[in-house]
Image (cartoon, rainbow, N blue to C red):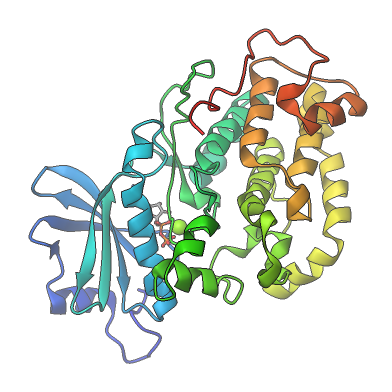
Length: 364
Ligand SMILES: Nc1ncnc2c1ncn2[C@@H]1O[C@H](COP(=O)(O)OP(=O)(O)O)[C@@H](O)[C@H]1O
Ligand SMILES: [Mg+2]
């Protein structure tokens, strides 16, 4: 059992809940079953006794630093603000409540419980039976859910354990696509725009100042700019999540991770020859991607660009996947792929059967 503090003599979780009587929060939210798999927090499924609905309860017990507490509150604030956007395309769990207990020793967040399958579980269980088209459809849905909501929000920790697939049909042809994917774990999320308006003491400023000083996300997904000077991270900033989506697309195509790192030192060393490694690995996807190899290789190269400024936005990559899935676009030469990827929506060498404009253009 995990201990609550690093201190050897600290109480363990079971005792803690006995001691504090923390089974019912705010006279309303009952904690029933601990959720395994979270990294930074302690979570439960439970029930909202005032509505009878299933809930997800996330706790930060004795947050170790002001940064950790700020990140927790940041997730609460972010999810609360998504209510309106969620009514157009639902991408985050619905916020129910948040607050603190015992003078801030415990922070809590209550959201609805999402019924679905973690993408990490899907990859373990369904990858082998799924066709390439099925797998690209998953990528399309995840990209659609992961692209910036507005205001340049970057998630910063988009790994398959933070993504839930809903078991519902997805319509690729509507004007308001619903990707049926829910993105979790928004503690590390950040909006450069909001940070520029924030007061020094705001949670957003604390997080902004903490970025680049501490690594708390899963490091497999960290993009190369993790080791750049964060003071000059400017316009490239909002391409951060594109890197994680490139790695995910590679995994959905091949079933493998593009890299394996045992420690942060290996990661840092790998970054010195990252471009060569990517080129080498991506060249090998032909065995999985068949006639779609050229266009998928091109797409991977555009997402896994070392220099963030030159990296593709997730929404552009989502549109590229749409051309591959719905228009069945399978260019057979690299020249055409290069011209297409430079400006997928402006590409005129092919007469599209279904495409008119990005269906999301009227929302963004
Ligand atoms: N709203 C939700 N509904 C159902 N399961 C959830 C929900 N939010 C999180 N989970 C599950 O709990 C785990 C941990 O939650 P997460 O927000 O990722 O916290 P951590 O920061 O500890 O990783 C997730 O990986 C997922 O399995
Ligand atoms: Mg998580």
